[in-house]
Length: 372
Ligand code: GLY
Image (cartoon, rainbow, N blue to C red; front, side, top):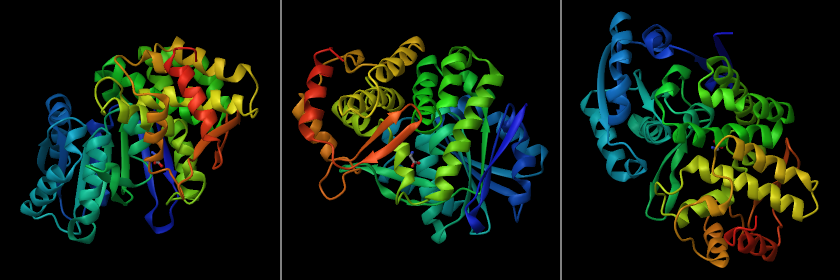
């Protein structure tokens, strides 16, 4: 298998996620059928532009498609009102119309921001996601969640706006730092943990080769992750139920990200991995899963060279009580109750609404003391 196609079934808004090596070089031919005139606007960030924009420009030129491009500053700070306004105004200046297509070429920040810009530009234009990080390929580019951060929190302003096509070129993953790759792997492992024990077994056997650059393993892992996400999104697009399972590890993870100021101390995917380990620990303490399950999860993350425990986060952290309060501000709070994704076994996650806060605080105390 050198390429795979995963359909996202959403009625008239259905689309394909195409995964393979070298898709950026064939982008022109891939998106040409979507175009009503041979012109696209590409929005990227400066880091991706420096490494990959020439390839993309060449492929559009070969397909006879005119390109106009905007490179935003890299980093999470870009995902706010200022760069959103800049992006939307630039698209208007480029005279992008409702019949046109906008291309989001970058990681999760670019995908979320450009997707939201496309959602509000002229009340909605079509867009294509070309995700360049592992995290964006397996998670944020699929499913239509778009938006920005505000002073009040992350992703609090946005829209569901599905892309018309997602092109995940696994060859661009070769240029990621090992740390960024492994942060994305946190989201890959999440899929096995939440709903596919067989995939988790496969990751235990093949994760190290995948991290070392094995293209076949990368294709298989991205494809399985996207299949799982596509299935969940097509059954529950707007997160009324099952889609919440994708937040496994995120309640703990978001609190830790917030506590570290969304800085280089802890990347999102690293917070998710630590959060998954804590969610399994909590599940075990609630008598939901067997004693050995959390150790198995931690052993795999450790073998991958990832951050596993709260103690792996450099620098000081707030108290357990303060971390609990940070969880309380998370948008996964419903009617003031903390919602956790817990598991009965690897691959069997479910939404729990009634976890006793005392148990969570006790777990966090131990985690902060390096005992979990
Ligand atoms: N990243 C979680 C979701 O798309 O629902």
